[in-house]
Structures are given as structure tokens and as C-alpha cells.
Image 1: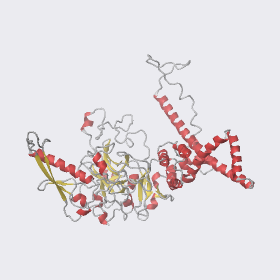
Image 2 (image 1 turned 45 degrees about the vertical axis):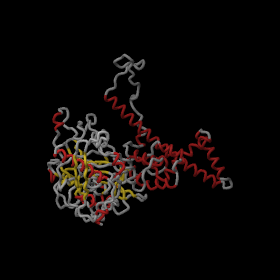
Image 3 (image 1 turned 90 degrees about the vertical axis):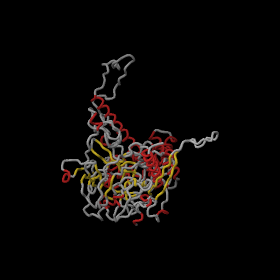
Image 4 (image 1 turned 30 degrees about the vertical axis):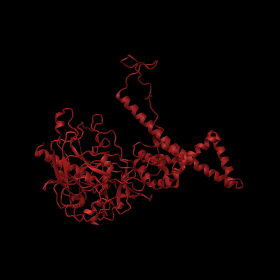
Length: 629
């Protein structure tokens, strides 16, 4: 028979497990509104598996019974004063449930810029089936159970967001804004365009002719060691090959990169020239029909085709087959603009060859995406329009500045400057995009309040002064030395590529929002929450956090990055998570599983909404603040 202490601990574990399952279940709690303090009482008996021996008629040794009262106040009425996760003893044991949707807090884009507007949409419903399939809620990739920390002292200030230290169940994928990317040919084409735009691969025709000039061959004979030989062998009649030095390897790598970029640029030139040639072919047929109206258009088309076949040196049938694909290029250009051709991946050939999904609806989608594609192309690859001089179009950039200086519209309307979307609330609004947080020296001086003392593991290891508190691997800004891959797209990587996100204009009065252009797997880092590290701000949107020894705020009112435009949802598809890099605490926006084309949302904390005169516009059935409307 276990002791009283063991039974009490076991009773609490069972109650916590049941409470978690109730919190994750998609239950309609509307019928509980009439109860002032709703709760559920459970009673369980534990005994030996052999309850009764039919042959001997002997009963097993007695077990024990536990009873527990689980408080439902917090989930039925989220504005209750009962803190989630607190165990309140009351005649049995009273366990409070954390809210059904315990996502972490974010920085509300429209609330930061528009004091009178509420939060955003961008939802992902909780799945009962998925919860049952993963009862332990194991961490996947970067989405890990966070450790408890010293809470920030409560005060009467609203609009303070925090990183909640909770575990999160798996969820259904969020509904996309406008159109959900499905595994069809057109969706693969659009996703390929976005991936090319954010891959960091440059497209500049000015450098095209100089890519292959070199004073000596960089890709000559390679080392071919023979069997039984420890060193390099001669590759020909000349001097024997030697192992390449670090400089030679670096030069070879740079040369290979240039050739790759040149090849990619040539591919872009190929498709835009072929699309333009189809336009010239149609114009030439129209010209022949105008000069000889008595001849049918079919004969004129035949004559033009024969003339072109002779110039190409191809058979007429071969040219017809190629023209069918090239005409697909032209149709894509007419709908999505030149950017959709220049940055299309290899899949565009298959898409135009088989013409699966070539319909009016698909072309309308491309037409609506055209401004967004051009904004990304002009800001991420400023020289791409120089390619258009080959087909007689202007090479002048239309959209200058940072990629997130423009707010795109879902209906294909012209993009709006970011500043213009905030002038109704602040006529002096300016926003500077930064990659790293800035310390407010007037508050902290030269100190960084995010600094955390090194862990005991780092003290033991003499080879490294920085050890990850999550994976216990060595951290370094040098990619060759770094062994921590918790968030490889943000820290310790060789090259940082822009996150495939874009600021868009919402259609339901929530001002701006942040859209995922490509899919983010569960646990993948979307970006770091950066801004001005300060403290003491009130009645403005801030991220409030603490290292345990010092509390601080991250303010994005005038400086920050795209995480400023992440909106609230009571059923969010992302969360903010603490991560320590080089003994400095960071706040990372982590995906819970986001499909391409959906809005990225996080769950603002109850502290943010406490006493706030805004209304929640997330539109979720599980909205915890809909009673405020």
C-alpha cells in the first residue's frame, strides 16, 4: 500500500492529466455560463488487475481510491481571477485548468499602429483526434516545452504581452487567408516562385558576361587517388596534382556559385524571350491578315509558322510543340507579370506542357498575386528588371525600399506604403526595419538586461564558453564551430535568408497582418521578435519578459521587424518562445504548423486584454474575449 504522500502526488498527476485533456478537447462550454464556479468531480479506484479469481473465488489485495475536484472556472469564464495551473486544495484537491487555447503572446500589428482597432484573424482549430494520437505532447523540432521562470509582477497596465510557459497540443492546420495552397500544379508553381524570391540567389544580367572569365582553370582535373596510394597521383603528363589549398577551394566555390547564378539568369532570359516571341508571332499573323484580308487567318498562321521553322532550323511539328509550351509562358506573364516568369522554378515547364489547372480561376489567382510578386522581386532582387530590356520593357524599379515597407492587398489592388496605413492614428509615423534588437541606453546604459549567467554545463566545458540550455550543444556565431541547431535558420548559420512572409491588408478592419508565403512546419522558427529593449512603458504594445534577475520590455513602436505585424487569435497557429543564444535571452516566433497562404497569428495573453477597451476580432468559436463586444 503506498504512503499518503505517494497517493497525494499520484492524485495530483492524474488530475493534471485529465485537466489537460479537458483543456484540449473541443467542448462547447456555453451551458456552463450560469454557474459561478463550475467544476467537475472525479473518483477513481486503483487495484490489482485480477479483480476476481473465478476458480478459487479469491479477491486480490485491496487497492486505493482517489478523488479530485477540477476547477473549470478558467476555461468556462476566462476572465476569472483564478490563475491557470494553480492547485487549490478544497475538500479533495482542486485543480484549475489552463485555457483551451494557451498560445503565447504576440505583438498586435494593428493595435500597435491603431489604438482603436482590435485583433486579427488567422485560426487553427484544436483537433481532438490529433490530441489523442499524441497524449504525451512530445516536443517536435524547435517547439519545446518551456521551463517555468520568475513571473513578471502584475500591475494595472494593459497591452503587455508575455511568453507563456505552457505546453501546446497539436492542432489542425490554419485556414488560409483568401486561398489555401494545395498540392496542385499551380500551387507548386506559386510556391516555387516565392522560394526563388527568398532564396538569396541573385539575378543580375550586368554580371552575366563576366561570370566565366578567369585567369586560370578553377575546375581542372580533380584528385583521383589510386588504390593503395596514400597521397595524390598524377592526373596527366604534366605536373602531379596536389591537394587544393583553402584559397583554391574558396575560389572554386565562388566560381561555381557564379556559374549557378548565370545559369539561373539564362533560364529566366530564355522563358521571357520565348514568351515575347509568341507575342511577336501573333502580331505578325495579324499583320499578314491586315495586308491580305482575302486570305484566311489559318493560312497566314501556316505561312508564319513555316517561315519561323526555317529560321529556327526545326521541323514544323517540333516548333508547334515548343510553341504550345511558350504560349503557356505568355499566359502566365499576362496574368502574373514578368516577375512570375523570371523567378519561376523548373516546374514551370511541366506546368505549361501539361496545362493542368490552366483555367480562368487559376489565372485570376495569378493576377491577384502580381503586385505582391513585384513588391518582393523589386525589394529582394533590385536588378531583376534589367532582364526586361531584352524584351523591350522598362528596367526601372517600381517598388523601392525594404520588403515590408509595402502592404499588399489580397484582391490584387496596388500595394500601399506602410506609413500610409498608420497616418490616421499618427501623422508622424515612421518605422525602421532592424535585424537585431537595440538597447535603450537611457534606461540600461551599456548593459543588456537579456544577459543570463552561463549554465553549469558551460562552466564544466573548457572548450566552449557558450552552451545551449536546450540541447546542451556548443553555440558559436562561427558556423564551423557551432553545434547548436535548435533554430538553424536564425542562429549559427552561414547565410541568413529572408523569411518568406509579407505584410498584407486585412479585409475585416484589423489594419495590417502577416502572411506566410511558404509553409512553416511545426516547430520551425519564423523570426525573432526584435525591437528596442527598454522598460517602464505603459499603455503601448510591448513584449514583456524577464531573465529572472531583471525584467525588460521589447517595444516595436518605431523600430523592429515583421513580427510587429503578427495579429492576435484565440486559436493561434504560432507562439512566442524563449531561447538563449550566447548567454543572451531571445524571443522567437515559432510555428505550430502553418500552411502557405495563411495569416500568422499568436495568442495575446490575458494580461494584454485585461481592462483594455479594444475588442477581439479573431472570429473564432473559442474566442475568449467575445463577451467584450
